[in-house]
Image 1 (spheres, rainbow, N blue to C red):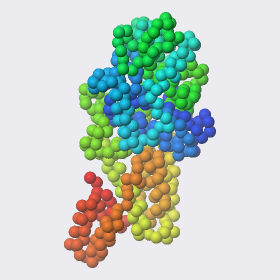
Image 2 (cartoon, protein in one colour):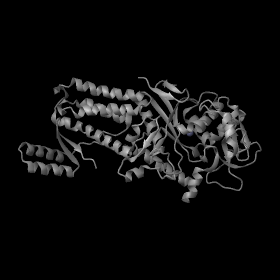
Image 3 (cartoon, protein in one colour):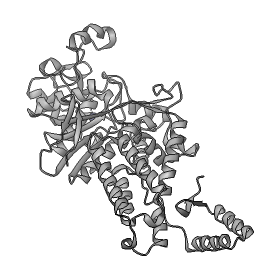
Image 4 (cartoon, protein in one colour):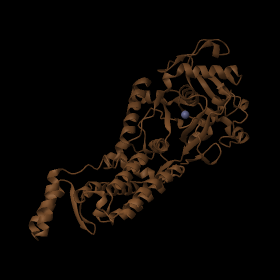
Length: 487
Ligand SMILES: [Zn+2]
């Protein structure tokens, strides 16, 4: 099967071809661990999780590296301002190391709650300092670095294709830069590879600057720039050229442009063959901002009665390259859709109760359509992760199922369909729809018997008893079925 990816590098939909047969190397720019991630931060990781899943389903062995930025990400992406980690430390009265550890754990815990597949390797920037310094050394040897008062910088004018990836207009950038940037820099787009700890200061996170890297051989403490971290970790774990690199669209003009400049200058080969970027998620049509107080976390959703999987469903309704809009109404719709899907998933327990074997059913057509649905879901996601399309394919099949008599549904085909949905979209339909207990089933049988005998009092009493334990009975055109009661 063919996977198509909208590649930022070429600006078009490209057929995916891996460097090595059946293997994919994938690098995801990870979180900066200085605060609770909000739902806008999570969006990217949910989309890239679907990417990993679809590559795996297509038979690829995926080696995925995700970094944890635990040092060197400054408040402004233009190498100015405070380190976000040191700022977090000041806010919380802890060391930067403690802040990093705490929010790394928060992040990893959130990944589990959202049912995100753990990357093959999680790299912490602070654990790759020698590799980062090595890369700076290589760049120095190539003559593309220079030193100013506050650090060692990359001279972007020495990388001829610097403007290409993000279609930057460097002249305009220069004209617009004015006071914004450090005037010692040769070009406004030049960026720090390694920053020096300001004289007389002591940072929580700092390392000796090797004197062969400086122009004056003076001993100074320092810390890495955010961009060099990703280049060094990708190189260490995945090699000089990787298959796919992912991140948010905000990374295109600075962070990823700089990663490319460093990696390609040092290694002399293309850094990544495919680049995928997710669009922003807005809240009530507005950007996330501290002052609006709309940076909802997974805990905030929980307080409103929503699960991480409700949010996952909400997000998958929008294509990763489209701008999303979060509202609690939209989240409620996603919750309802997921609840509805779970009630379809439990039909698989009820089919076995009434039918002894698949062969007894006259259901060739239905079987065929359910197997074809599994295939159609995979094809939709193969096409540049078209999750909204996959969701409507599932809705259509489920609507048909809701109108099919139980004895006409093929259990194997339904199980396979549910398995495909879980594997591709990670919604945990199977795990979250266990069968009801034998006691409950006995109650249902008794209630149906009472109904047949027209003993309405007893029938109603048993129905209420079932409601109390979270089971709703429906008598409709497909038979009497039970469902979970939505809380
Ligand atoms: Zn990165």
